[in-house]
Length: 335
Image (tube, rainbow, N blue to C red; front, side, top):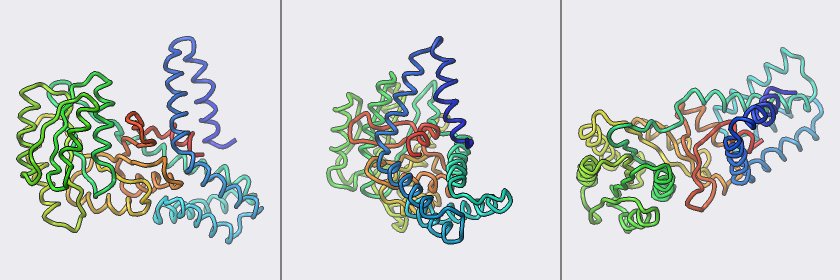
């Protein structure tokens, strides 16, 4: 039995049995968490597992042709070329040194190695560090159409359900209807809203919104920004200006910059992160639309190649379909 299956069995049996007598609600919550991931990641799991099974049936021994096709499967899963190249190289070394011949045995090792990549990322801080006194500010960035505003709405609902006083600030004054869209989310979630008319200076909107947040003692401030491409210098400069306003007005507050990515774009998501990192210090990632793609492997490449933790994933269209990213639950669901 491989490392992943051993840990998985421990996770599903021993830990649960130990907790049943003490905290049954925690066990139930853990089961629900895994079930949510499994439902949302059906396409990714079925795609990867079926291809790996077909490959194992096709080749009984780990030949060069086997590794070539395995590499193709992993790249098709959008794990990322650099990550895949390193992964295949490491796999070949293990086969050579451990004298592994059977592809059936190798299948378990592949799962183990992928699991290790996920687990290693848990050393990264993948939760928002909420401030005890004063507002925690979360700035959302990303290109057009990735779901920033919807993500903010879903997280507003999540944080409100946790008992936090939430303020939404509409600093996307460029896109037509963006301010009204965020205001609609504030009404849906029964959270507060601050915004100005389309065309207003985004940094000025953020400044005034932060003044409101301090005066009215908000716990969390979620700031929407215009979608922008890294090669549009004036838009990136605007983002830097907004960040400076936040740092100046709330120097001692907990601040996060979360980049929102569309999981269905695969390799493009990896490139977007690298581009935005050059302009702003990104603390974490939000991966949307994971339920709509068979390329859940993009998670591996995004984290591995950028060394930035994924903090939340969107796995459905409902208002509560935004989950904290948990590598163990993710691996349980996808493999």
